[in-house]
Image 1 (cartoon, rainbow, N blue to C red):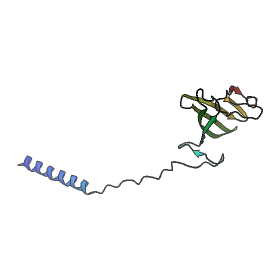
Image 2: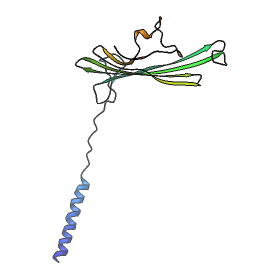
Image 3: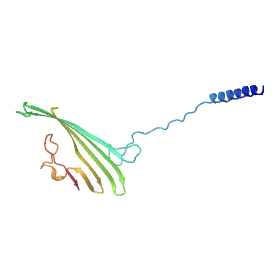
Image 4: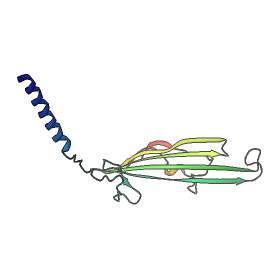
Length: 161
């Protein structure tokens, strides 16, 4: 009879303990609000902080559409349409030597959807007045400074300025 009462007593104690746990309310911690995009006004308009860092990022670009009309400008046709899209990423961060700037410019060109080209237009780092990478210099521009004619040959240099 001792074993029987020991088993019944253990079962009763187990039921009381598990019943008390089920009655306790579950309290979930309230999640803290997360600020996904913070505006960075240290370097001008259009910059925002990369989450988790003190680096500011600016994304900008354009799309251009051009139609050329004339005799045989499109090979067999009297018209030709060309399109250009460009996107630029600029990242800036403060250092003891001044702002560290990194720039990447990608350019995408299409001519009547028959010729398509994607190219790295510029990629450089700039700190304390020193610029190193792939970029245009003053010697690359024509007399008018025009370097964005779609279809023209543009000269880029790997250089340090």
